Structures are given as structure tokens and as C-alpha cells.
Image (cartoon, rainbow, N blue to C red; front, side, top):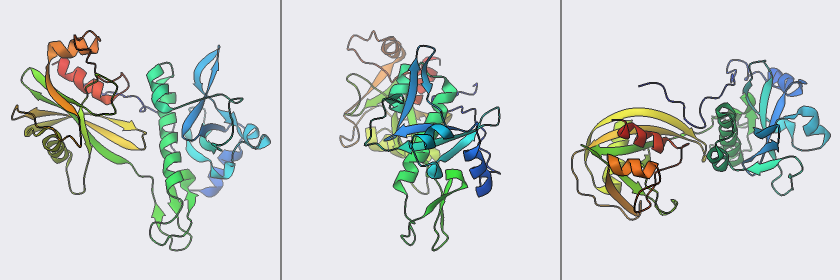
Amino acid sequence: MKNIVHAYAGSPLDRAGTKRPDVNWIMKQIEASNARFLPFSDLSVLISETESAPDRLLWLSGADISGNNIADLGKALFLGLDDQGAAKFAVQLDPDKDWSDLGTIIDLRSLALNGTIAPGELAIAGQAKSMLDWHKQHGFCARCGTADHISDGGYKRTCPNCERMHFPRVDPVAIMIVTRGDKCLLGRSPHFVPGMYSSLAGFMEPGESIEETVRREVMEEVGIETGYVKYHSSQPWPFASSIMIGCIAEALSDEITIDPKEIEAARWFTRDELQLMRERRHPEEFTIPFHFAIARHLIKAFLDG
């Protein structure tokens, strides 16, 4: 199977992991004339929607930021270096102010759904959102409670009291379709759009392998025992900061018993039904997830045999 690059993956930036621990190097990048800063308001990104550059990320210079008192450059998060060696950063704006004069504020789901932004830019925006969200939630040391500070350009927080280091959290999630012969099991949660069925999914727990997570989640949500589990692909998911580990599992039984606390419905679908759902021609108006979700690619893998 060829390597699949999902939405929010495939950033073109060099994260400069060996250079960013140097505080002086980071400051030099912030002060460079070619440095660019990506503004967020309440974890939604600002984009430019000019006729010449529709749905492009709004990159501001350091002079734009400091000259107009837009954000605190001391709290800028380093994202990486572009192919010209210019540093890219993310900054958080005051969410209580109106920033419509700068650009259009858009959440990352809508940005992906529009399908007009370049994949690399969407990946950068996803990385920035995940990092900004983590720093927003982790202003104090989890060991001693002291206010900690940004280090490594944002890839770490360090406590000045006990010297404990804290690193951005990524939550692993197993997401899977369950197959049995020529049919595939999908479910739906109450928050889904009407008629949409998708892959089952759940967070990994301590001490579990990916395969064990898949089998446990399928059993808990639909009461189906599964055997062989095959890895398909993975997708960074910046809501808030997860890694979706896509799998295909073979069912050992047919009877579905749903857990109503987890999902509201589940059923088996044939390939013919799934094709109609993909084309939005299903007689019951059932659909599958949008193009930017790994769940759609898992379903496509089953349709392709």
C-alpha cells in the first residue's frame, strides 16, 4: 500500500530539533526580518481571502506584530523553518478583540472542509493549533504547581522551581472499520451530522497495544469480538491534539449490541451500500465522513478490496 498523507499531515517545515533548545537561536529567529507569524484567535486561525490568494494562511512580519501591538512575540511558538530558511511561528491574539481588519477567522475543521487551502499550509495550521492549545492548558507545573515557562521554542515547558520538564501531549486514538466477508460495520454518535455513519474509535489506555485497543473498543461499543487487526495509516488530529491510528479489524461474530453511552446506532453495510453513501445516493440518505477524515480513507480501503 502506498504511503497516504492525510489532512493535517505533510508539513513542509523543518522543525529544527537540534537548534531550537538554544534560547539565543530562537530569539535570533524571532527578530529576523524574514520571520513570519501565524495569528490565532481563540484557537481559530486567521486567513487571507483576497482575490489573488484565497484561503491562504495570514503570515505577519515581526514589525506587523510589534508595531501594531498585535501579540506578545515573547510567547511566540516556533513551528519550523521553510525551504528558504525563514522561521515560522504561531501567536495567540486576544480573543476578546475584533481582528476582522487583519483577516478572516476560521476554525480548522471548516478550513479543511473547504478543500481550497494547500495541504502543507493546513498541516502547519494543525500543528500550530495543537501547540497553542497545549500551552493554554499547561501554565503551571504538574509536580509542584509553580508557574512554568516556554522553552525549546514551545516544544517544552520548564518549571523554574523543581526543574521538571513538560512536553506537549499527543493522545493516541485507535480508529477502525470492522469487516466480515463482504460487509463492513460502521456506527454513528449523536453529534454526527444526520445520516452519517463512520468508523468506530477510542483512546488507547495505559498498557495496551494498538491491536488490544481496537479489540476492546469494538467489544465495548458494539459487542463484536474481533480477531486479526491490520494497520492502515495514521493522521494527526488537532482537536485538541490526537494521533488517529487507522486500522481494519476482522469480526468473529455478527450480532451487534451497542453501548448507548458510546454510540446511538451501528449496522453492517455492503460494498454496494457504501458506494451509494460515498456518492450521496443512498435511499435512506446515509453518508460517510468528509474527505479530510481518515475514516473516509478506511472505508475507501474496504471498497477497494
